[in-house]
Image (cartoon, rainbow, N blue to C red):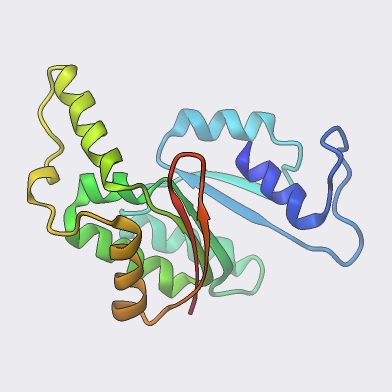
Amino acid sequence: ELSVALYRHLLGLQDKSSLEQPAAGKDLHLLCCDIDAALIERARQSSPFPASISFANLDIMDSASREPFLSSYLGRFGRSTFDIGFCMSVTMWIHLHHGDSGLREFLAFLSSLCEYLLIEPQPWKCYRAAARRLRKLGRNDFDHFRSLAINGDMAERITQILTKDCAMELVCCFGSTSWDRSLLLFKS
């Protein structure tokens, strides 16, 4: 739903009941990736713009599968990078499952692949809540949770990584969402 709403917004298609394709001269393609195959299949089935919005089941941290897939997708348009990448509520899960080095690798990869990057980092309290939910279910903590050195103000920490390590520039902080998450726009 977010991807379709974003597509409509970027093309100025305000009428949600309209299934019209982009106006002449407006060529916009979105690639939407998620690790959850069921979510991707549901999105594919309900997309009103299947020619313009592609949904792909992809583990972005699996470089052996992401590199050929993304190169092939971009190659269809004669491109080697995306104009903009949107990373919404993903950084915490990458961080919890792949540790500090995984978060750094993820951000470096995105910064190399996108001219602009809009990112919504989850605050540290979300990490603690996710770990608490696991414990309530009787499961072990996330493998990396207790050893994460990158913690605290996650918007600030991610900004530091992207600006210092990845040579991106913070263009704008759009404030916080209703879930107390910052929306940060970076440029290569």
